[in-house]
Structure formats: structure tokens, C-alpha cells
Length: 90
Image (cartoon, rainbow, N blue to C red; front, side, top):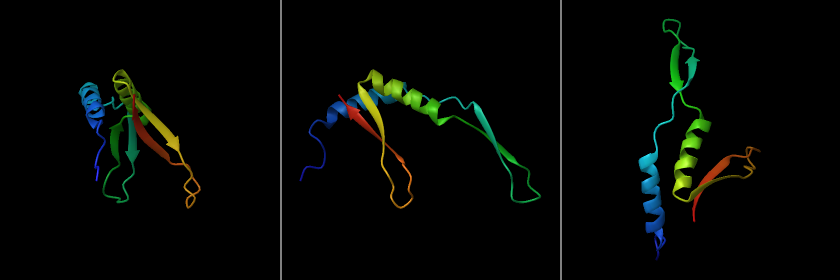
């Protein structure tokens, strides 16, 4: 039984090179969460947008000829279209 592709070395090598270039996106957005307890104050945090993270990933993967394709499908139970990201290697 074949457990992986015979050509996995090519994609694994390209992914390893792409990962070296990746850095965490800048946390430029802020949010506050109200505490449900009257004695505790609100909590704030900083975060990066999904768009900024995807931009970094797409650029790094693209330099190594790896495409990230985001397709949608219909979840019949929930009647929504959840994204299903996947990678392609040329």
C-alpha cells in the first residue's frame, strides 16, 4: 500500500524553503472583550488580520512555485459556503 506520493520530496523541499521566509504578520488591530464578571475589567488584545497573514503566505509560497487555492463548497446542513484551502505544486 502506497502511503505517500513518490514525488513528495519536491513539494517537501519547496515547502521547507518557503517556511524559512515566513514571519508572523504584524499585529496591527486591537479588540476588547467584556468580562462577564463585575469584579474583572475588560481584556484587550492585539491581533493580525487574516488578509495580512494570507498575503505573507501567498508571496512566500509563490516564490517557490506553490499555489494556494481557496475553494468553497456548500455545507448542506448549515447552508453556508466554508472555505477549503489547499496547496498545489507545479
